[in-house]
Length: 152
Image (cartoon, rainbow, N blue to C red):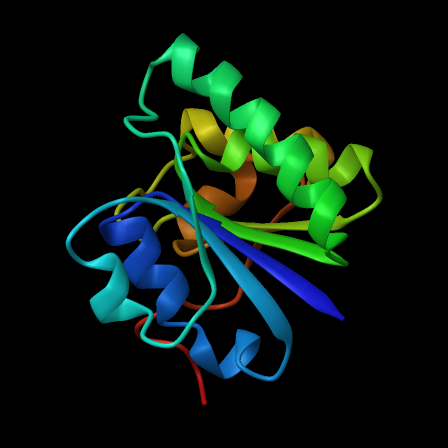
């Protein structure tokens, strides 16, 4: 099974990298934007770079949507897993349209539901929030702990 891990650089990428226990046993590729922390967080990982700045950039939304089509068609991942933010939207939608399951994990820095989460929720097979208070805010939301304070 191939896993496509998608996250904007910074905190989103840090949280997804923190789930190594989950993704390390699968064949995988990463999509993120170029930043100083990427290679430090993901040594020896296959990284594909998207177009940044993703926040409120219609131009990069279009560019990343086209990139998502190319990457998802080429890799044919079984699952697209993402922690957001703007980069998650085109990859989740394209992934779903091309047959992948979509797992969205809301960032722990947000007690409520983000715009990215609202945009991905319609195509998400699983939607995890990291605060129990956020569960009623999204129909599909589940709480299973936090990335950094998970139950073991």
